Length: 77
Image 1 (cartoon, rainbow, N blue to C red):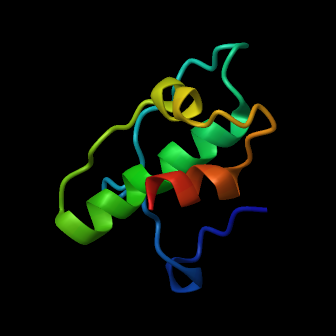
Image 2 (tube, one colour):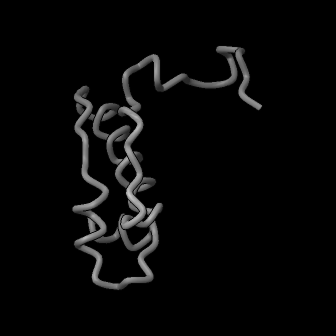
């Protein structure tokens, strides 16, 4: 359940830290969208600019086909 109470937390959409909804390709693993979405929000929070990242490019960089969000974050690191 989403709370409408502003005291419960920060609405990052209001702060511009949430990128647009991406068209999920059936060829890209869902974890790649999770990682790129997290990094997009982090870029806005830390630099003030919302930088958009490609889930496809990230997935292409992970040669382990059992890719996970953890592998994605480790690769970016």
